[in-house]
Length: 184
Image (cartoon, rainbow, N blue to C red; front, side):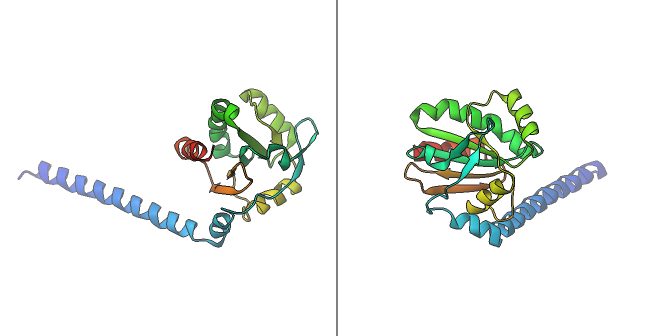
């Protein structure tokens, strides 16, 4: 076998080793993150009755969680400075348009400066409520099981008011849409 062929095999094996090491590392990190007390607390919220809250929207009107009783509600905690938050919002807009008539309601809770939120929302054409609240919004996030303040953080609530799933970090469209279809 030529040196060129041996080098090609060596580099190919090294590439495979790198991919396997990367996959193993991701698995270990995911396993660790899924077993932290914060992750366990978020998972413990599943099947619990959703917390209530009263927070202002962007017009200053106080909004109560009870407004969305009887709907499948997706409560998303986010901030304008959070890239994964910004990435998933167009998905939420699309899903709200697609399933809103069937009883789906997204509610965004911004942990951010009101002016920055107003400016960002203006660029999106958002059609679901955005609430604010500084410390109150942080407390609500904690009430939903987000003790470490991860962003984004999302809770999906069924029509009876029970949390069916929480997500720490960005939500994939496929995962969320499957859950919505099963919950509607």
